[in-house]
Image (cartoon, rainbow, N blue to C red):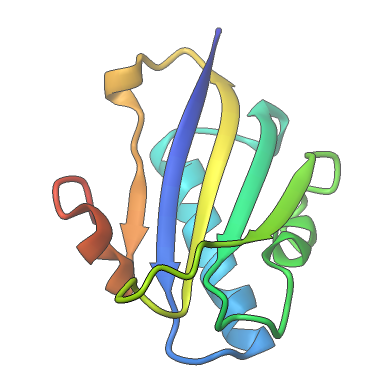
Length: 120
């Protein structure tokens, strides 16, 4: 087993607790399935949100998905002029047998623009 990092992002339409929860579940479920991971494989998860998302913590949604034993952290993304609004990003550290080239990074909805080379 090796330690790997996985990136992902998703954009939502507006700042709403329900939309944040829905997006986190979609993003994390897709990342876990795409990389054949279970919660036990996760070392830590760092979520960032753009400054326009303040209605809920993404980590709360991840905990509700069964990641209560995984160290989770939320932070605010830098407010760079012209950056993509209403975006939740994630950096996951995990153990896996996959090589770095086999890791599936996941960019969904409007966040596909961030990484057109690997977006779903």
